[in-house]
Length: 347
Ligand SMILES: Cc1ncc(COP(=O)(O)O)c(C=O)c1O
Image (cartoon, rainbow, N blue to C red; front, side, top):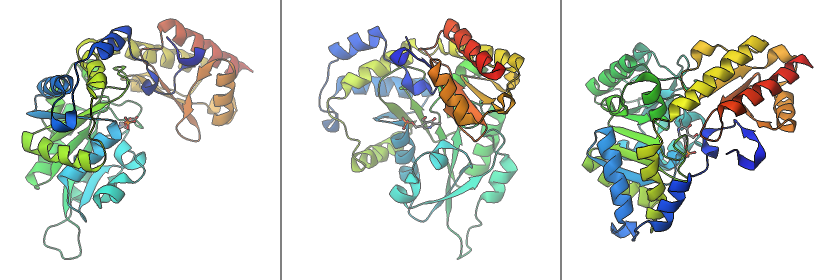
């Protein structure tokens, strides 16, 4: 099912809820969650905590709020937070960590989103120097969005987590697409989560729920995060209607992500054959970054020409388009999209 009749490769956030989700939403048992009385949200939070191997979970309206509530809960004003230089929490969240938590970002350039543990070690401020902010948190992103859906290697996660913890820092994982990482690597999401004090993951991307993300961690952390969520205006009332779809996202929609990965690989292989700048080996999950320079056209021209022919994609740099596969894109759609790319490069 494509949105608006387009083959929509802009993002996996465009996925529509399944029929089963819509039925579950209509029938959900609900209550006022700010009073702790929504049984469906409680069920979702228990399920999320269990799947990720953590003590507790919190349902939040968006991935951005989940990341920002986590940053706020881990830090104090004036702290410094280390994150990869192109990570979502730094690049795409409207400067929220500065505005909401009063913390300073210390971006560390990585390779497709993967930071070198030695660079992280070097970025930690020495304690006791009166000029320095206190480093209190490291944020990891798995899979990495601007890294083209890159799965963080587990040994890299472990090495950075060890460095952070041995220096008294906490680790937050932006796992918006952590189940893509699980499906691609065969490593359970809970294994990645073991090395993080908190993990945020999204129900509303490849897993197709209409709204919502989860934050998981220790019970005392989640209790404090719940209060911060309330402060940010994220205390929701009968949101069990949304949680009902989230339960189906977690129980029914994870394994099928493999189809999205297969379609992404198919796109990458075919576009490379056509002469586009893409390396299929770098396509690990549901994202393909395509350099359109070989068309001789500017990326926004290619974006427009694709749209005229029924394919939606977003530019993510002056030369590249990002293509994202998801539940609304079949293998036939992927093949049709390749035909459109073929027309554009041959013109
Ligand atoms: C890696 C990553 N983290 C966080 C988010 C934020 O999620 P939301 O759009 O639900 O705020 C996104 C959204 O695309 C993302 O890609």
